[in-house]
Image (cartoon, rainbow over all chains, first blue to last red; front, side, top):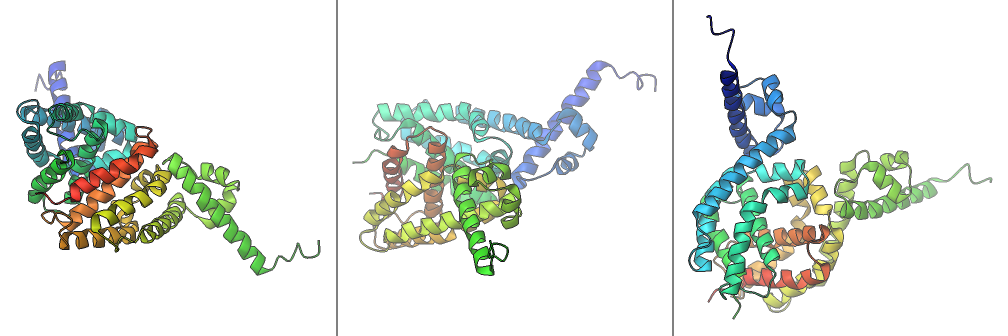
Amino acid sequence: MATQGRRPGGRKRADAERNIATIVSAATECFARDPDVSMSGIAKAAGLGRVTLYSHFPSREDVLRAVLDASIAEGTDVIEAAAPHQGPPAEAFARLIRSCWPMLSRFGGLHTAAQRALTADEVRRYHDEPMAHVERLIDRGQKEGAFRADLPVDWLVTTVYSLLHTASGEVAAGRMAAENVGEILEKTLLAVLRPIS
Amino acid sequence: MATQGRRPGGRKRADAERNIATIVSAATECFARDPDVSMSGIAKAAGLGRVTLYSHFPSREDVLRAVLDASIAEGTDVIEAAAPHQGPPAEAFARLIRSCWPMLSRFGGLHTAAQRALTADEVRRYHDEPMAHVERLIDRGQKEGAFRADLPVDWLVTTVYSLLHTASGEVAAGRMAAENVGEILEKTLLAVLRPIS
């Protein structure tokens, strides 16, 4: 009773941090399921009031950016754990796709939400860090003769980026079964990268 | 002087049709240049007042749909003129990409505008007719052994659709030179379709 009125700053900060984590986690699932989800929908999913939600995130774009920050950080960790700089390029690439895909398929409509609410440039900048790993791997593969070198690295990186997100959208729309997509993506992208004889 | 006050119905209809054609043509260029162009921007580009614009198209989505109708009809004509049902599948496919690309690159930001303003399902339905030609060609190629048959036709059609629009976006953003993209797309997509030995 005596301490309840005082709530020291540390406790308040801990509450705020817990609320933010709850919001980002709930909002990730919301955007994945429905790219057009509203702030009310997000507040409800997080089990918090709209006032609390808006006190941490003044706009829907702010929530979306926090979700993208967390998702991209997770994606970059997964890519780094796949060690794309090690071993034969084609094997490293297959390993990278296989390890990324389960995470990417879970994000579903998030990329669509980002495309609708943010500029194309901003959405692209979010992907700079994970895509830098893909770029280095493709560049290495071209230099080692494992990947075709008659197509520009930038275009090959864009192709990987585009088909990963396209596949994610197909799964979200129910047009592809998530369990088949990893293998299909691996076959498709390795066909693009393979040197032509 | 005497006839000006009467303006028979035929003349009025002709004026309306001319205005609609002017709006659709100007709006196509507007969306291609800036996916977020406003109704005022479109009216200005068409050299018409906002009242006239709104009398024909009550909302921005209505203008966008008219632009998509016209663009997709043009695209379908170009695809049919490339005779995708004739000759060896790989040659027919290369012919189709080479004939589509100049038109597609001209549409620039239009696909982004559609993705932002309309649902993914509606954007996809607009492409059903042109993509049906691509689907028939890929299906024929798989049956004749000219294209790989271990990837689903639907996914291969989606790959073609996705990379064509991605390339269009890259050109619109100034990251690729329009004159190189036709050849790059042809090489990339034929690599995906080629049977693996």
